[in-house]
Image (cartoon, rainbow, N blue to C red; front, side):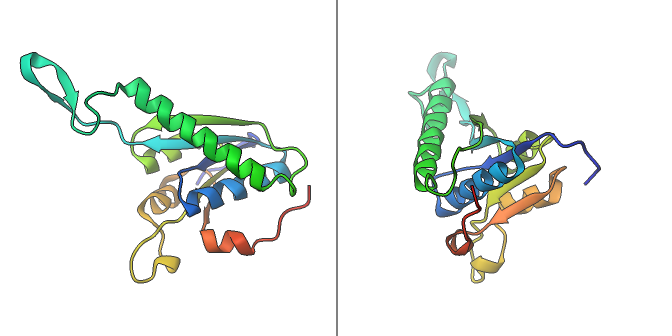
Length: 168
């Protein structure tokens, strides 16, 4: 990690998992504390394109959906998650930080590291699986910890419930 200027930006990776929601709650509270804005990033896999009859491009997963439709659906779902989490923390934050919701196609780890290239903090949830899931980072959070150019906070959903709310 290299020395960088403060940008008053917190980037958070979000999905519809308990870990993603915990990361979002943490990022919102931390941004309020810092006086920072938040970029909420929902990464999605780009469809695998193939060629159908007569050279028409098709995807295996979503042959009838365009990339723009997939992008819009992911962004809309991420916005709904943000709205739900903002409603949950309404009593603990007087005014939520300014935020932008982004849907970005690509590998989640690489997408988040790129989105946080100028951030003060990157927040991700941990969905590590296996026999010691609570002690192991998931592949996305591990990628972020190893490659981000800013500090990374990895949030576990169980730890989020035990965290006392920050003063407004």
